[in-house]
Length: 105
Image (tube, rainbow, N blue to C red; front, side):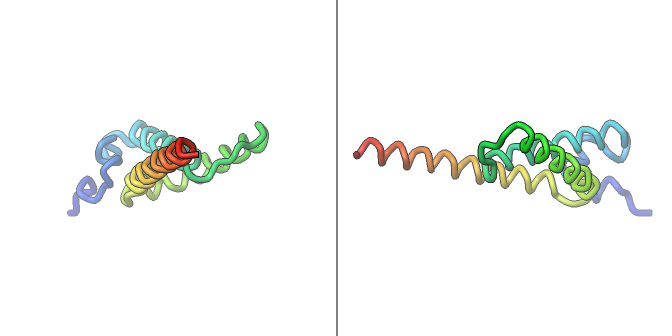
């Protein structure tokens, strides 16, 4: 018989989704949602009115529900971590570039 724990993604194994399904899935959902919000804010978010922001976050939460089920065996959270790191590096370099250009002017 195949052991399910061998096929779990890193975060699913970290949260022991196979042993504690309820708590593990909620922790995985929270992780994916927080990472998705970070990626959204860093990469795609413009300043929106409150109601539009609420709608965006509701749909983001619904989408993260689906991603959580996929994230048990696929590296969804890990991909979001990589995306967040790339966007953080991009934002830092963009800030340094703008700071350097304003100092030259």
